[in-house]
Image (cartoon, rainbow, N blue to C red; front, top):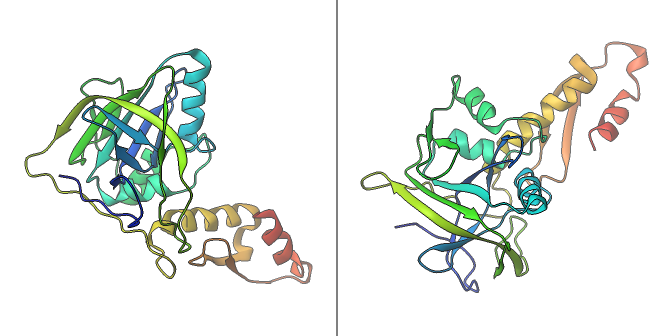
Length: 239
């Protein structure tokens, strides 16, 4: 049912869902994209990153000894995928970011077994929980965007509580590729430009994150002698 892609050396089939989580205390949402692999009829791994917002949610659940609810969404509107892979601050809303791309609120629907909403455009939704004692399993290797294989890592295991889907579901398949492929970085590039303009206003004409995403080109407009050297201050502040 699910298209897959990955390294020939990978031991498991990989999927690329939009993953929705909620903070167990505040109820704040996060929407990210994390790899998933099948581990039987009712379990999946979900490569939640400890340093990302979903990882904050999971750590909060672990501190309280409660399950973390999460929903894996396949075949969403592309705006949801762009928002999910965009690097955003903890207090910023990926659902609102997707709505900004659409020009209207992103439609959502209530989950069947979880107290959360997911994109209504999803073709398939796998609902579940990461339950105490928060078991881990091995996944990898995975082809990274710089063109090498990542290492095997231990990631959380999710217990499935429900699977819902449309008739004849269609999934969006994202194929990881090395540079010059850059579609996944569009949202982050837009936020980078906004961040720079927040630092220096109209002094910033344009900015571009190159395909490697570890290098940036910043275009500025000097309209005053005091602007000399400001471009270096902006570049350093952007770090």
